[in-house]
Image 1: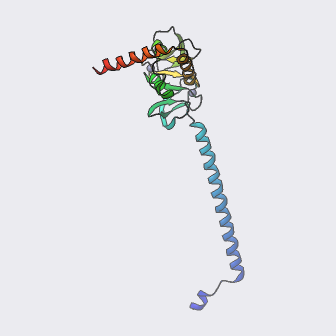
Image 2: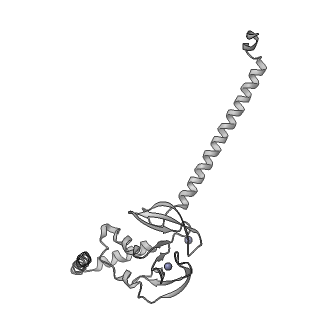
Image 3: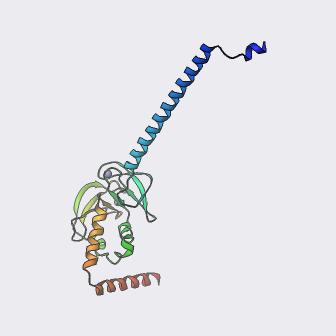
Length: 205
Ligand SMILES: [Zn+2]
Ligand SMILES: [Zn+2]
């Protein structure tokens, strides 16, 4: 009895088994390839979707906020340990109160940190109404402000003082400030640096 059970299967059965095995193997290979391909395509899509609007920033996750320009859900990013929100669709960025100054201070090894006049003037510059809702206050409409003597428009919330910059807005501000820095006499930079030190000293005392 045991000899019969252990006997090799007839040839036609073996061939069928091999055929079945190959079919299963091929099916598995194709399924794996298809899955890998789909995975790669999704990753590519995510990378495209998660490209932040400021070069060098890292994607952190989604947020509950909505883009005031295109309605897309905003994503959270981080640059030099500073968090900010950005739109993966239109490339705009949202900076809460004083984050624009902080972000500007980190550029070019801090060489732009003496230039605060334009940022301080955002609150007092003449404004134009917009239809864009504030990212945080939601029911409050932002106002549009020109940055210094540049052509860059910033949307500002009169309530929480958050700022919305369209795609490329931050880079344009930095270019404008870099040009301003180049045009400043060294005596003026010295004076502003001294003022800054005094301000920090007074704040500390
Ligand atoms: Zn958007
Ligand atoms: Zn607001």
